[in-house]
Image (tube, rainbow, N blue to C red; front, side, top):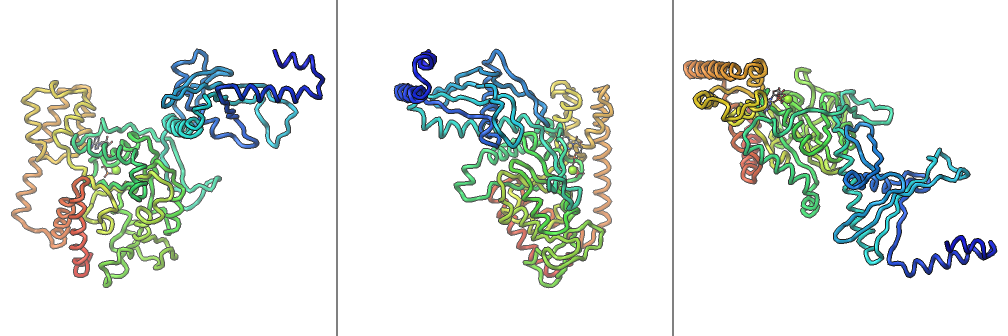
Length: 505
Ligand SMILES: Nc1ncnc2c1ncn2[C@@H]1O[C@H](COP(=O)(O)OP(=O)(O)OP(=O)(O)O)[C@@H](O)[C@H]1O
Ligand SMILES: [Mg+2]
């Protein structure tokens, strides 16, 4: 009303000055301050605008009557947003703020290098003047953080691979990605519940540990070594980890990487909040390729990484010619200065033969947690019965359950084997359980027979014995987590380093 009045009464020359003075007086007496967050700031898209939009979407779906709905690329969920010129009130640490989504037609004469949307969109944030510092500091940080979280949750996980070799895509990216939709979760993973809970707690501690890692001066990363026979759920565990934390997976195919610098480049192109996986690491590191047999104990960098059976060989300099990367390159990748470019990353190595791994990989601090994925225990079996047959403990005859428990440990059957039996008979649940019992008994019998034959023959080679001894050492030293286990692992390294000078491998 005042503006219209001024426009009618005053000539144009002084109209603008009067309006300016009135505006200043109003601002002076107002208890509020206002902030415009426009969609486009000059020429670039305003990150804060997108963040506010996402942040408000988590409230809008509850309070708004009229919402705009969007579904992004690579997303399987719908995002709610405030409709044009709608508003809502938010509270943060006792501070109340008012958000309004302001949409006005764009002046068509505006000059721009790139096509602009027809409407000018922005958020108007109103807060009390006394809360200014909280709003501009903590509140907007909180909005950004929440928005990133929502963005991650809404976006499908991605599975990256470097299977293209060293070649880059059109955007200069060495990784190829596909949506990652593996259904494995910690709930469906059959393993000892205590061990499972421990791993989940460790993962959560890691994900929420930014300030801890900052305070203690450690790079925000964690390494897990999963080892155990085939079919015990190592890959399923990785998928469960990714689903649990909402991280992307980078599946690193070492045989496609030719030099240490290529490995470094790949690492630099990974995003934070991701799991970097090297599966079957014993198959990638060829121990027979050790170049310097004599000087040994501290020359862990002298292993070549090449497909097993390729005959090895290769260059001698670190990034040198030929298809070789060195173990030290690999260790730098996980552990050295380069490992902490970016943050919040988990490294997972898997192997079926931990006894074949170089002690340098097992040394304390390298892989923070060694997880033994073992043959199915009775507790794991119960999870599989629930997964595949929908059976709880009470649904199976007590006697049958006892028989299963008795034979379970002796049978050494992997969860994959058990899954097979249960899937095959899942239409007839009782039959499935009986058939499983038969299979377990047959397996246990076979094991017993084999054991007695071995005892009678005593035909193990020295090498076999050496490997068994080493496996036992490593296994006993690598119980999940714990300083003690790391200490034992160190000792195991020392033993092996000494041994290395004398023994063939
Ligand atoms: N612990 C487990 N819990 C639930 N399912 C499992 C488990 N272990 C294996 N399976 C089932 O067996 C199949 C093979 O498992 P997975 O690929 O995870 O084994 P793995 O240990 O990675 O084997 P490999 O060493 O051969 O790579 C999966 O499809 C999965 O359904
Ligand atoms: Mg696997």
